[in-house]
Image: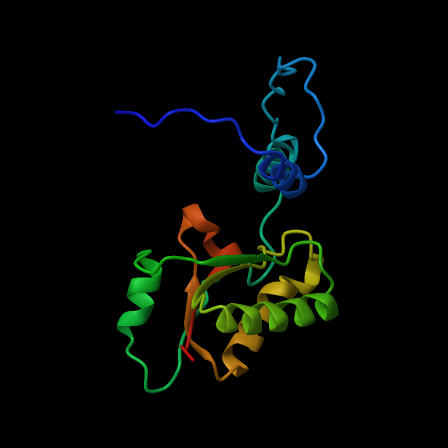
Length: 178
């Protein structure tokens, strides 16, 4: 048998009201609906793709732009390079150095690698670009990335990315664990 209903006492009502605090009566329970926003248009990506196509059709790459980068720390297996090139490691983070000056890129790259290692993101991509707008000096950011990565003790290996991941305009880096 269900228990009989009983009216709450004045003390119970007062205790309940004190526990829930101030209340506001709902006059209208209809939710206000708004239209879904239109889908985003990747204008910058489209502009970048068009610029790359124009540059590819009109200019030869500067010296060093088409060179692939590859490095394995002494004592590490050379198989790492094959695995990096085959996409066998999952890239956990990316840093894009485009439009940075060499001093700004130097600081950004050092900070990025430190943060990646601290965050246990041991396989990362660094997009340095091909240096197509670098003129006679060639790809400065590419050379910077190559030099810095070789000097760091926490870099096990790196190599130019697969074409779908940036090709010779990016490197995939494998860092040592903690």
